[in-house]
Length: 253
Image: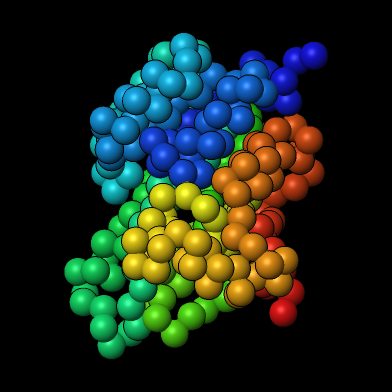
């Protein structure tokens, strides 16, 4: 049987590790050709080599408009089009409003929000030219529910949530065949949790985080990648401007 996104070309930022890498692995298994991008060239090259011949890596700073234009062009030239954009690149910061320095605030927003804006702006013409497709922006449960010590991250991820709705409405209005949705994960066992594991030890760190999740555990990367696959595929052809909480029930409380 053909894969769920057979014949599609996807570009995934933050593809060297974590959710981006797992999503790339799943997309390839489901028949897509995948361009992964990351600022970490060594890890990105290693990931592309491991993922196989239908995966290509491009070094990419998501805060650079020129680099966005270059990676979209490179992906189209390498694979013949672009149908799916998954924006996974991002950083976190655990500081409250009084602790954050202005440069830290700007850095979080530059990567987590400005990068998403630049990605949509660069990719929309290429996706339209390829016949339409899907944009999936990875926000966070922190884009829906605030924390006292996550001021910049809350702000940036909430911005991704509402910005993506604006993109969805624009694409619907101009009828370019592109949908745009967001996913909102909670704690997922990826390298983003490494600092907590180093501080408390792996077992205790995961236990402490799991106590905050009604379902009682931290999520797996594949449990985010599969919902992204659904939103990227034609199975979700009537879904745009939506948000999917992948949070083990946190947002239900």
